[in-house]
Image 1 (cartoon, helix red, strand yellow):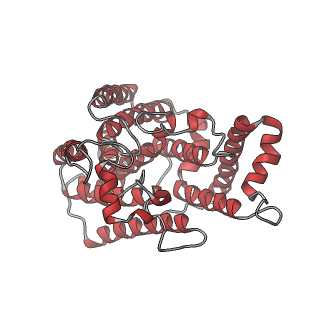
Image 2: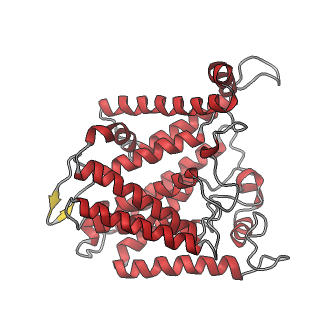
Image 3: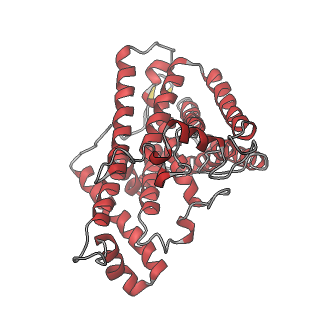
Amino acid sequence: MSPIPSIQFGYRSRLDSLDVFRGLAIAAMILVNNPGSWSHVYPPLLHAEWHGFTPTDLVFPAFLFIVGAAMAFAFARYTQHRTPPQKEVYLRILKRSAILFALGLFLNGFYTYDWSTIRIMGVLQRISLAYLLSSVVVLNLSIRQQIVLVVALLVGYQLAMQLIPVPGLSAGNLSPEGNFAAHIDRLVLGTQHLLRGGPYDPEGLFSTLPAVGTVLLGYFSGWWLRRQTVTSRTAMYLGIAGLVCLVVGGLWGLMFPINKALWTSSYVVFSGGWCLLLLALCYQAIDVLGWRRWGFPFRIMGLNAIFLFVASGLVARILIYTRIGSGEEAPSTYTWIYERAFQSWAGPTPGSLAFAIVTVLLWWLVAYLMYRQRWFLKV
């Protein structure tokens, strides 16, 4: 797709700001996934322990939100005039979803691949399933029907979580062991296939259903933006919608707590509000004011986002599983680099943060070299 925004038949064909937003999201994801030491993480880069919301809790929903917003442009030829897609379109969607899911299993199992205990779900797996389900919804339902579906999905998820009891426990138990989503995951996937052997998985199967709502919120934003002229007023309306979602999500959280691990309905709306605000800022800066030089460093990461996520995860695992020296006491290559190159002069927590920042910069350099070679790896 062309990097220059254009108007076709009264509709936007793409958004540079969306590539920049995607680059911000993948840079943040690499940052929070690669501290020098998990025992010394810079506090804002930690998830909320359970209920609550931190800046880090915005990273994953932002990526799903962007997936949805991009769908509004990728599927425009079918949704604009409600043209039924051919079978080949669904096959491409299924292929992309399968590749994403397989990449997630590849990372989860590295390097032993013990299929009896491998974690089945994960970040890429959730993206895969949420993209697959959202694509079917977008291609087959009108925008009004989609909005009704999202409301029903979020309300239904809350009712299931608060009214259906887990055997041996009372209904509405939202603890890691007692929540209904974890119970379903244990029944379907098996405890041995959850994160670290259970009792729950933060990217579980059942909690992926409200994550579809996050993707569709992004789709609604992209669908609306395609129909607008490029003005500050458009950015302002996005920002207002974001503020409304923050208020609604915050109030909803009084009844159904904001919780990333459970991907609660209030979390979907609240995080969606922040995504709308960030998209509004990117839209105003990049598309309206034309500050493309500012956005360029992030844009090039956004153009190869999935590659950067998989490659950074793979390299981190290689560094963790290889050791400097011999014997059980020998540190992993990852720990050795952190302790010698960062902790030794900056201290534990600042050194851990510096390690994460340098990791992002190194992967930015990889993205830049790929951009110079015009290598854009798509799933």
